[in-house]
Image (cartoon, helix red, strand yellow):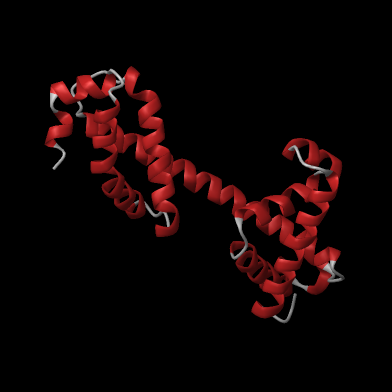
Amino acid sequence: MFDALNEPEFVRLAVSGDADAFHRLFGLLAAPLASYIERLGIPAADAEEVAADALAKVQRSLPTYRDRGAKLTTWIFEIARNCAFDHHRIASRRAAQDAEFCIEYVRGNGHSADAGPMRITANAEAFTAAMAGLSTTDRDILRMREVMEYAEIARAEEATEQSVRVRHKRALDRLKQKLATGSSHV
């Protein structure tokens, strides 16, 4: 299936920036890349996005591709693998941030940190599940608000301070709703 993509003439066209060649490349590789990325442990919901990121990197990097004995498709799948690893690293950092945020949220809502490790663990699990159920936009505003003032977020987001306050309040309300429906102990 990928043999045509490794033909010297096709590679030359793709490297030279030929739009038709890249569209053909994209059409033939989008689904196999997503499947490959999924096999690397990326959830199916994220695999297509990671594959699209990989193909965008391929498009930007194609002019630098040099045939050094490896096929073009091998090079592309290597880029996809690196994108999957990047995704894993980012997801791990977010999980750690969520755990820290959870502890602060639990403390800030009247629960003592001395309530014991089992209570904190149960709260952390419920909180992590609730955060995972929020949109990326909601998670981002909640995380930013932990370390930034409303005015700082407004400048960073090129928004008004009032709109940031409203977005934060709505994100908190959605988080509280998810926590209330998912667990009665947070």
